[in-house]
Amino acid sequence: MAVIVLGAGATRGASFVDKLRDEGGCLPPLDTDFFTQLQRIANSKHQVFIDNAIKDAVTLFGPNFHVTLETMFTTVEHTLRIIEATGKEWKA
Image 1: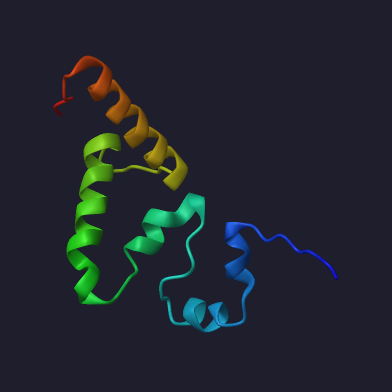
Image 2: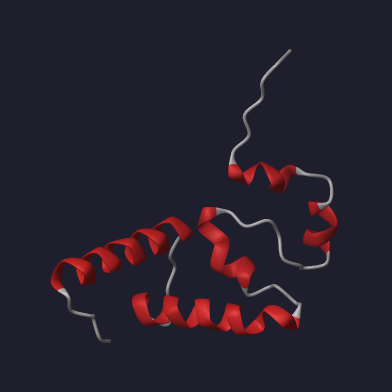
C-alpha cells in the first residue's frame, strides 16, 4: 500500500478544472489567488458573503490589496488577540 499526501492546491490538477479554466469560472483556490477566485463565484446566493469578505479585505489592506488567504487569517487572528488583550477595538 502507498500513502500519497496531496497539498491543498492539488485540486488544480484535477481533470474537471480544465473546463472551469476554459469557461473563466471559479477555480479551486490557492493561498495566493483566493480572493480572485472568490470574486469569480457566479451563484448569487453567496453574493452577500463574497461582498462582505472583499469589503473586510479592502478595510484591512486597502482597495488594491494583494493578500494571501494565510495573511488574511493571520491578521484576523492577531487583531482578535489584540482586542482580547487590550479590550480596545481598532477603528478604520
